[in-house]
Length: 266
Image 1 (cartoon, helix red, strand yellow):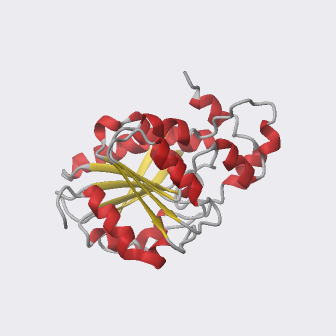
Image 2 (cartoon, rainbow, N blue to C red):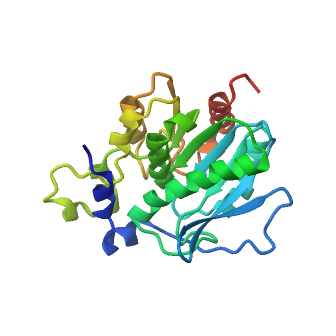
Image 3 (cartoon, rainbow, N blue to C red):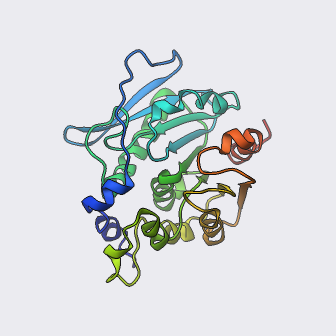
């Protein structure tokens, strides 16, 4: 049996954390649109994760979203309306040290925190009467927590969406420049995206820019090939890089997500 916890703990070295995480603190004071709800998830004594909920409707599908590196959930104030106008409730979660969350990020805490975040996401929806199906999505660095949730809670989810995600641990180490730290590790697990997605059988959508300069499109193709889902789809956007998929082809991007999250066309 693969020890995923050991794999992430091996990455909790200062030289990796320094190169992998780019946290940015933000305050919500004076920045809350009238329709937004902030939510906090306690993950440790004195440490809470900040989340932001953008509601479309009580019967709408609910998308738990893990954002990319260097981003915060407040960055989605401008993007969330694209989801809301298409009838999707968007619930964006930060990481430790990001946005209005406490603590400092580590690889193991990012993965471990996904579990209380997911449980709180479900309880939050139940308490407020949001009855739609639940999905999980991760972008870039957020692919790791999203795949972690899909791996553990398939029975609670209707689908997984991965945007600009990575597969191979060795390739990820090479991109971050820490391959030398794992020379004595025969099969490094890292976050285990490639290993976990093999066991994920719920409907899966892979989105990637064909010209991605940070995480090459080959990583997205690998995740698609490895996925254990019988119902899976992909969208590789021509000429799109790592951060401009919505700008290059917003219509195709959002249509793929709508098709995943709605059982009937919207």
